[in-house]
Length: 413
Image (tube, rainbow, N blue to C red):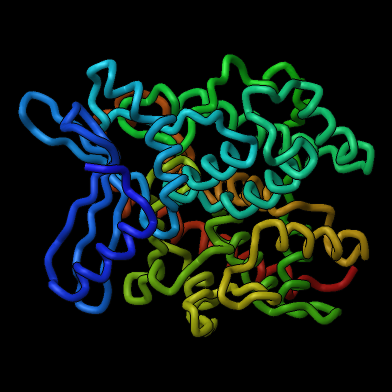
């Protein structure tokens, strides 16, 4: 059979459209061990044309898809076949194991990493995508990933650091390092295939030192807790109401900011007063009975049409981000109308005050979904501790109601 031409393809398309019968066009002469082929199939409203690399092994024909015509032109299909399949067939290997031989670019690597985060349902993927897109613009989107050096990464980080955004610079460094680490592993993961081979030999971000981490110790005492809670109930400035409600739920439950911010109607069991997360930061499902004060507050909130209890003020189709809640709290701190506190400090505050309320530490750990590293907890204990968590939350509820009532009626000095 002669080589395929554009005119041959057009005639074959008309024939398949009129006869309703499938046709196979093969590029080149002779039976051989493998060739480029175009399979034309009649459909109810159109004719599909699919490029295939076909090969004969042990008397059986093996095929793999290269692309669709005309999106993949004849010239492109031949180039892909020559690049990725011709030598593979000559070596006697299956076309099923062929991969794109082009070295992956920086844009390919970053896009692949973001796709991985999405597939793992990581809530941080949108922030990571935004920062990596900016990094790709600085490094060069079409630069082969294997050619990126530590100096290239520094050209991304230094301007951020120079603006005084030390924490952001450290986060971007972590995102770049994690993306290259993913690429190094993905190429050798027999369980999956990545769209590109990056041929990396090292991670360019590994040698760049991280910002020194300072463990937080701040927590609110009872007076400070009351001051903040009362301000959130009745702020002295215009504030998007879901933001103040979300922070109060964090104060009353001790949960992670991201998990409360993304609270959806499907996660709330109004009858049992339980919040149930299928995925959390540590990768484990988590469910807590909430204290009655928190239940009353949640029940008073009407989720928006997209099911979010705390929608973003800018985009109601999405929940408020943890970063927005942090910024909201920082602005009030600068006005000195609330105590100096971050949302993470509120989680530490709950841990401390719930201990004062008499909730045992192991139950506080389970309520806050802290990882338990002993062998018994990790591998054997499958009890959900819901009864014990209810009892702990009941103690906390009595404590916090007494605190708010006592402080509210304290006589002036």
